[in-house]
Every structure is written in C-alpha cells, then in structure tokens.
Image (cartoon, rainbow, N blue to C red; front, side, top):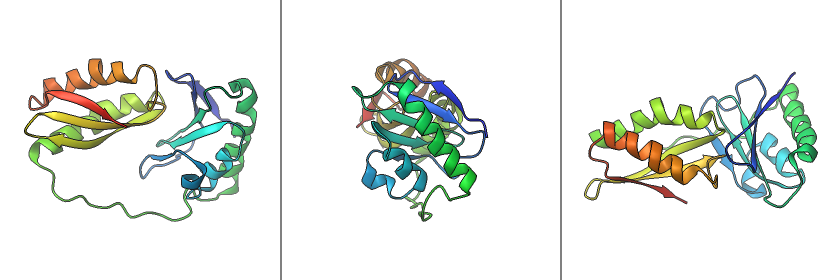
Amino acid sequence: MFIQTEPTPNPNVLKFLPGKDVAPLGAREFLNIDQAAASPLAEALFNLEDVAGVFFGADYVSVTKAAHGLDWSEMKPPILAAIMDHFTSGAPLLRTEEAVADAGEDTEIVAEIKALLDSRIRPAVAQDGGDILFDSFDEDSGVLSLRMRGACAGCPSSSATLKAGVEQMMKHYVPEVTRVEQVI
C-alpha cells in the first residue's frame, strides 16, 4: 500500500491519501481523544505524539499537529504506519454507524445554498484537506453561517477563502445571501 501526502494551506495540517475510500458516507472530524474513541483509526492517530486533530474526507485523512510540537518530518512516519495498519487490518472506520438525523424540510433558499455548497464549494475545499458545512441561514438578514472543518478550521487563509471565494459565489448564485460568516 502506498500512501501519498499533500501539504495544505494550513501549515499545521497534512493530507494523507491512502488510495482507498476513507469516509464515503460523509466526512468526520475528531478534535480530541474522547471524540476519537468512535473510530479505531482516529484513536490510533491521537495516541501519537502531538496529533491535535483528525479529519476523514471521502478519500483522504487530514491530520492536524500541535502548533508548537514536532516537525512533520518526525510525525509522518508513525502517522503513515497507523494509517497503513488500519487499512490493511480491514477494521471499520467507525466502531458504530451513526444514523444521520433528518433536520426536516429545507426552504427553497436553503436547498439552493446546500446544493451550491455540495456541487461547487465543498469539492474545492476538500482538495485542501478540509470541509465546509451549512450551519444556518437567517432569511431576514441574509446572513449565511458556515462551519469549517479539517485543514480549513484554523487555517490562516480560511477567512479570505470565506469572504473572497464563498461569499462572492453565494451572493452571485443566491442573491438572498448578503453576508457569509464562519461559526466556530
């Protein structure tokens, strides 16, 4: 098994591509060891020195390192070993499959926003090892709230991406959107 690595715009996040589906049913993020208990792979990664976050995309794993911890040159070998061990073992990504809650019917505007996120924005953000999710839309003020995950959360360029890229695109295709904000 050959696992490729790619840098991301966030210097504290490295993207690992195992050449296999990682989370085809939906992205997952783990921000601490307690959350990681839901996944054998996330737990194994958090047990390594200076791992501060794990994100599973459709076909990649993004690992966040502690800001003032080890260098990537020291962290990559054990991370690669943990990922390889997981995929060669045949263990499931998650210990239990979680049911996705249906939030009910979306308004027409919210459905448009989600469709644009899924078709144009999320694929571009995934290339950088992250994800962007719909949080809420206030139809009275036109404020769209989005949640950044993976390499995008805490990335120095995420606010620029949100304002220059996402906000402009949303305003263009969904004129009801007046502003885009990041939910932390």
